[in-house]
Length: 297
Ligand SMILES: Cc1cc2nc3c(=O)[nH]c(=O)nc-3n(C[C@H](O)[C@H](O)[C@H](O)COP(=O)(O)O)c2cc1C
Image (cartoon, rainbow, N blue to C red; front, side):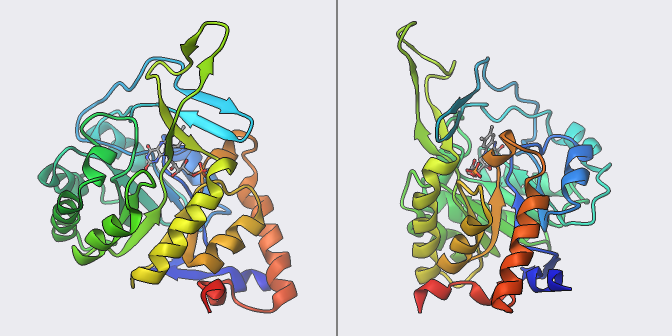
């Protein structure tokens, strides 16, 4: 009965709760996306580009005491193969397809490959891949062009995923002005770790993106700042491990919240977080949607 208090609406998409699988984590196969959709409000697939892309050599992910550092390098099977895989998605939660490209026309061309998508998320923020991700997302004019071209290419909602490694509000405003339906804040922060025995960086790419618990206060601040300046919905991401983190992101201004690194520790997260959120709304008697931005007043 209390489960209905978890429902939210995001850019016209009806979601059973505000939790979304973040891109890049368990999002490479239709079978895992379908399974996770049982308790998630929406799932985001791994970012895909037009052509096949190998990514970096191992090691690509480090598990350290407060989260992860990854430099996967946007490994991708390419649009045709990934569309074939995602066509097998059978979940009842909206499937969001995350796109990367090195220029606006290529971003726009990608949308037609994915009829199964309920929305598109634009990766303007991956900090460790050449010519894509943050290379695009650090230039407000280029972000404007990318979002405008993608929005022209599809009727579906378009989300711009932002980086904390640049002025998140400036880029968020450029995306909003160009017609983005929502922004996702935030992708990983630049970071690295050194093996002190080998006296070498651990990641084959030397540095990567820091995610998980350590980044949560930075992500909450990004959501807070965007909420003050933008009118479109904000999707929070970064360091969520408990139901309290979801409530905190929503009070900062997030309509929905993505969860990624936490899945390295358990693949039952959505179920247990959902149960905890039900206990929370039973206590408050309020719809979760009503707490969005509550900390601002
Ligand atoms: C191993 C790994 C791979 C990722 N791949 C992608 C990706 O393909 N596209 C993307 O937009 N973000 C990617 N991310 C970033 C996450 O989607 C998310 O924004 C970030 O990890 C912060 O959330 P978290 O702390 O819950 O993981 C990746 C993160 C990790 C740890």
